[in-house]
Structures are given as C-alpha cells and as structure tokens.
Image (cartoon, rainbow, N blue to C red; front, side, top):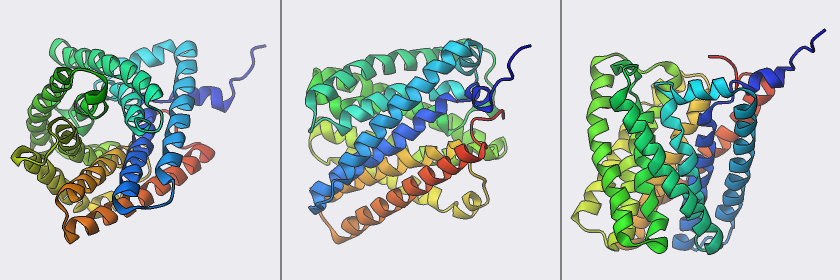
Length: 323
C-alpha cells in the first residue's frame, strides 16, 4: 500500500520561480533604507536588518526550489518553457546582484562574490529568454505583460555594483542591452494592454514593473556618470511619471485578491524610492525630500503588508496551489 502524499509535498510542485520576487522586494527595501539612513541621518539599522532578511529569504527559496527541481523536474521544465513564467527566471540572478548591492559597503568581499556569480548568470538568462522569444512559436500577444521587463531590469542593475568590480566598459555593455530592450518591449507591452484587453487578474500587480526600468536605469547611469545630466533627468522623471500612473490605478488594485504576483510591486517602488533619494541628495529641494520620505513610508508599509499576507497565504494553503 503506497503512502498518501502530504499536502506540503503536493504544494512543492507548485512552488513557483516567481518566489524570488520576494528577495527582490526585500532586498530593494534594504537598499532604500540604507540610502535613507545616510541621506537623512537615521540612526536605525533597518537597512541592515532587511538585508539579512533578504539573504535568508534567498537561501530558503533557493533550497526549496532546488528540492522541487530534484523531486519534480518536469514541473521546473514546464516553467522554463512557459510563455509567462520564463521571464521570472532572471529574478534569481537579479536577487544575487541586488544582494551584492546591499552588502557592497559592509561586506565587500561577499558582495563581489555575489556580483561575480549574478552578472554572468544574468547575461546567460537574458540571452536564453530573448532567444526563446525569437525562436519559439508559443508566444502570442496575450502572453506579453510587464513581467517581460524582468530580464531587462537585471541588465541595468549590473552596473550599480559592477562599476567597482569590473572595467567600466562591462557596465556600459549591460546598461546598453537593458535600455535597448526596455524601449523595444515597452512598445509591445503597451500595445497589448491598449488593444488586446486587460491583463488577467493575477498579473495586474505586474503593472508596477513599468516603474522599474527607468528608475533602475537612473541609478545605474548615475553610478557610471557621477552626475545628474540631461539624460539622467529624463530617466528619473519617466520613472516618476510611471509611479504616478500606476498609483492612479488604486481602485483597480483594491478589487484584486492576494496573489504571489503582488510582490512584483515591491521592487519597483523600492527602485523609485532609491532614485528619489539620490535625486534629492544631488539636487536638494524640499519637494524631493518630502517625496523621498513619502515613498519610503509607502515602501515600508507595502513590505509589511506583503510579508503578513504571504504568511497568511502559506498558513491558509492558498499559495503554492495549482492555478
């Protein structure tokens, strides 16, 4: 007589690669708080605590997903060929690069190791995802969604720590790829949203990802150039407009249930918070000081809500289930 699989064993099959968005959100929060502590002289080690929380989350998620890969290889293979979930695989390399940014000042050797692993993995995954878009016939207009920006964000994230760990030309290489495909994909995704119906409810929170490419690009460009020039102004204000545009959809988001995809809104808000802190640090102004504080408060409340709702979802068995 065979043993009946436990509920946990059954849910392992549905442990999605998109869980790494949790690391991106918490890690982004750590970077934002680290910057805020410097800019405003805050004496609380919130950024450090969030950084270790993000590191622990990465380790736990990586172990669980590794067990899934060992026990349910076909489920992992299905995700890797899925027209939507494929775009979440670069969240693994983005998490490594983001953790490298988090620990760059406090643990530079550890940061360098993380970046040295994350950057080449990011490049390989970006090449694979873009090749899949070119070669396969499974992709349709309805499959395009803001999550397709994830491989792009990973590329423009590389220079933030990379300027200290590699020749500047390598940072420009990754930055150029990210900028090009951000613009190319934006036209495709915007066309899909206007002319081909609304996104499915589970994917609606990915609208926040529209904020991430210009916000992260601004941060990376500032790291490479060292000053807020005309192009930096353009990148920052595009990010600010998309933040306003997405937040204006508040009524729509209020009607949605809770899904793991809600974590997609955390990293973009963290990115625009860091960008605003940098903008205020370089140029000053009471408006940007207030905006920095408001975005940091929004980000902090959002992370608390997401952690609580995720914990409740795990306890209630509503997460890691068949869709």
